Image 1 (tube, helix red, strand yellow):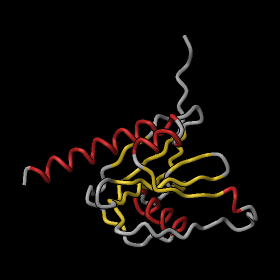
Image 2 (spheres, rainbow, N blue to C red):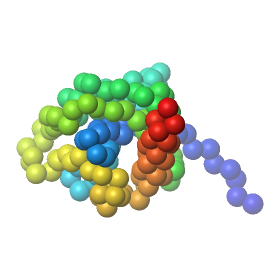
Image 3 (cartoon, rainbow, N blue to C red):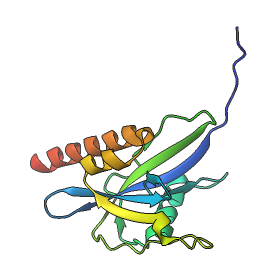
Length: 151
């Protein structure tokens, strides 16, 4: 019998930023080198994960007008071997204006990119580890649309 090994959780927190363009929702995805993700940052001891997520999105994109219609609902990824987990909240922006912040010391703008994508397009660019988050996002949007139809 193998001993149980306790792995502490390394938490990153981010936002799935949504924009309704009049006909459908679009999701903001960011690319750093070859990896696509939603804006996120590492949560340090004592920090509020939602506050970290908001700060990370604002610092990366300069988007200020974030509405949290879904409150503090969130979805986490499956833990990786090192115990790291990413938690995502939903936020809606009225604007698609993004000022991508290239980290200091990085001189290759080609290594950083943003896109507003549909859920289908997000499925094509995001890594498999974010499939649960993407599926949850779509379910939350469908549930919200149903609630609005019943009003």
